[in-house]
Length: 216
Ligand code: ADP
Ligand code: ADP
Image 1 (cartoon, helix red, strand yellow):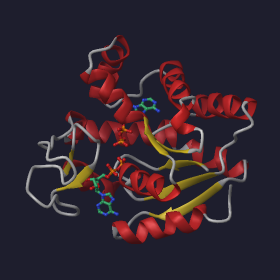
Image 2 (image 1 turned 90 degrees about the vertical axis):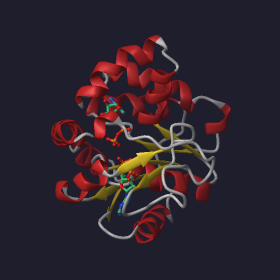
Image 3 (image 1 turned 180 degrees about the vertical axis):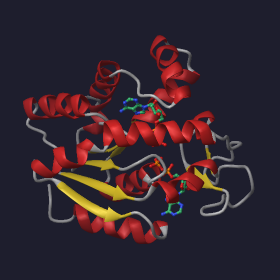
Image 4 (image 1 turned 90 degrees about the horizontal axis):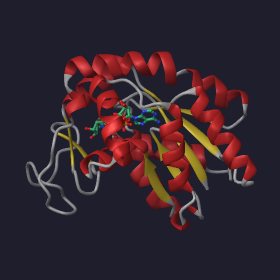
């Protein structure tokens, strides 16, 4: 099954995509995690992406499209995938559709996680994540079992530089201007389902699972 999770920064895409991918037995592909790994490895792509990410702007479409297309062609993505953070603009969605249609592997479902800017802001400023496996925590809403370390691998958790309040404001503005139009784009294609993202993580997960049943 091939699923896209849409929603503003802090909607819970990363949290829910990890669970959904596990439940569907497909890979979780997060464009943000892949870009951060490229940065950590100091590749040319990572270095190019850095200035956009640090200011809350989007990395150019062609760069992200090539990167994600490469990942989607790997053998571990044959059974399907859950995309998180990609596509994020209309040109990215069109490029993705062209590639998937040519491969006769269209998107089965796009789940839009609806949450207001007021709800996501404290989620982002309290977010901690594991630099090794990408797992996300929140100091209040979803704390690790032992403070400051990843439940799974014990690595010290870090705060993302772009979760600082001034960058969060810019990222939300970028979301409204560039990513929100994807809701209509996918609605017109008949694959969109919307869920309320302003609830407990488990409750939101059940809504997402329900939205994925009966498709694909
Ligand atoms: P996104 O990938 O959409 O930016 P994340 O999954 O990283 O969002 O979640 C952002 C932050 O909010 C994290 O700290 C996460 O633990 C927390 N979070 C995610 N879903 C919920 C929820 N339903 N209620 C409260 N906090 C949440
Ligand atoms: P969040 O879900 O919290 O917004 P991500 O981890 O998805 O954050 O993205 C972090 C940053 O990485 C974005 O602000 C942007 O600079 C870059 N990025 C991630 N995905 C894309 C994409 N599909 N297109 C362009 N830039 C992206």
